[in-house]
Image (tube, rainbow, N blue to C red; front, side, top):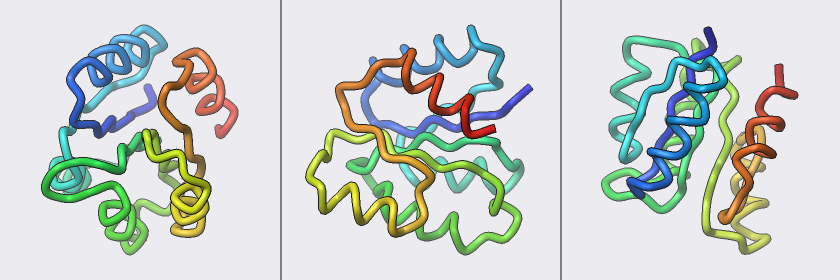
Amino acid sequence: MKKIVIADDEHKILMSLEYSFKKNGYDVFIARDGTEVLEFLKTMVPDVILLDIMMPNLDGFSTLEIIKQDKKLKDTKVIFLSAKNNPKDIEKGLEMGADAYVTKPYSIKKLMQQIEEMF
């Protein structure tokens, strides 16, 4: 079973993504900010991390920076899922090492398909 960490501070988004990924056979872990993501990463290596950018405490960009320094996470796919749709933000996210950048609003079906194609 593939493991996915979903990080977002919007409850409705977390609920819908959690439901969809569980329905598709994923083991789902929910984080409300970057610090919670990093806590999960101390004890596991997920296949995918879905990261919002604008979150309290530790934002998505800072979280990705820390993730990229950890050699055991080199095969983990990191996807930004953000309302920040400015081309400069998208470019920054991809240059920092994100495997994909999806803007909100998004299609869960397309997101799921995009993730499946990464493996």
